[in-house]
Length: 305
Image (cartoon, rainbow, N blue to C red; front, side):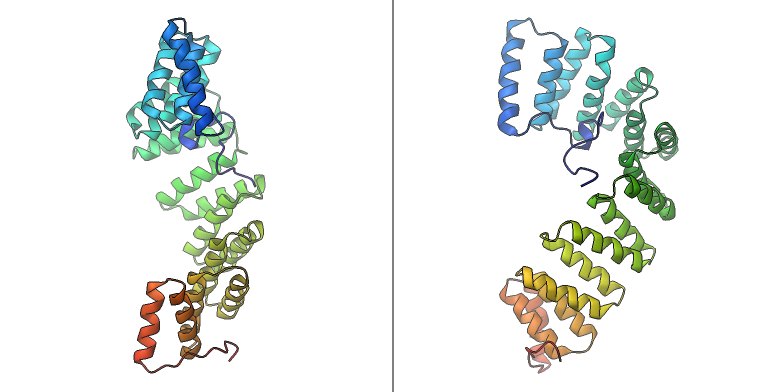
């Protein structure tokens, strides 16, 4: 699927969704195992680091930080410090201690100056800290070391958008999409940004690709309909709504269909759709239906007219 929603790329720290066990139960077992070793007093840096990974995997980042600090204090082999520091920085990000996160990345950069993932993640840390100039430098360095890193390009797009460089953000995302054609996250961002610059044709195209990748996700249908409606492609929006409603009992799709018929001044059709949405639990659709009743609009079930 491209940029994995759950797993980081190689070398990506806990700040990007790092987990060390397949589930909570596995992490709990690992914590119990390593804690038992720690209690013997014979735990080396590798045990403390693995205990930190287990705590990070269970979402207990304050304890993970203490374990990583202990591992570094004991003194692992030089080549083993980098992954510990990466996960330590990621854990600081999770508890929103950006000062310590940056401090850890600065240490990492001295030990791994040619690692693009460190430069990319430190750029994000500077960005979160509001240090724009430093963020630019670190993003540029990350992309110079590895211009084909889709994760750095993806996060760089957010930074470009934040500083008003939407065109650069779109360019970065297009490059990321070339590298990871099946990434829903990249396609989603491209659609959003293309809509922002009123390139609705491209925005719709990206939404269509997202839908093709995941037709069983109702939100993908709803997003496509809204993008089509924004571009005033109302006939196409109606068609997608109707196709979606063949698959799902979606109050939002019924309401959106009602909104589209309202745009077309087909109030009887709109009333019928709002009533369908209201029966499925939409209070906003109920309000719209009641407003049409007050105007003495009768629901028209035949949506083809």
